[in-house]
Image: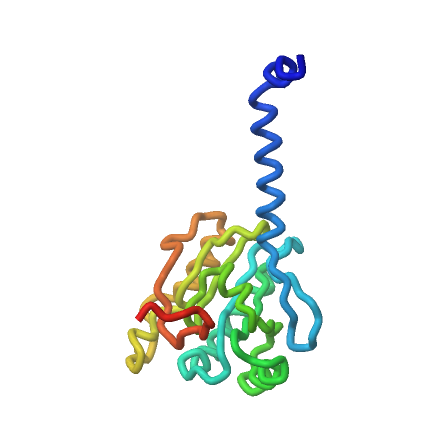
Length: 198
């Protein structure tokens, strides 16, 4: 009799319950917790009513990443008032190193310490500088270079031809899909403890 009752339960209701369960799991996974440079726990991808969240992956000793500091400060200054949140994600630094780097390069942003690479892995970031832009619900909207100034290691244009991060943010604010969603960032590889395939 129990089997007959289950079979009469509408399939659409079962599917709806499964989708709800999976969406709850996804929402939990979309908000990794890390610590900021002051040691406070942060969930940078949690929904706080922002229009989008930008994670900028850096390392204090990467020359290419350091060269982008003025532009990153300008981008944050232009877009933060429009509802975009920014975090600088340090992938190999202590909180003290990260705080000193923010001060030295005059980055008026919250620094996060991601030594376990929770955010880097979640975003798919592999080099610095690399930007990852998420919706307020944790969907990855863009990942890649800030602009095309760095052509390859050791070759940098005086001025970029395409400002990819700005274009992505403009599209998001206008309610358009970001295209391209992924670009190739040029810079220093994020160190991992994973074995090399070489």
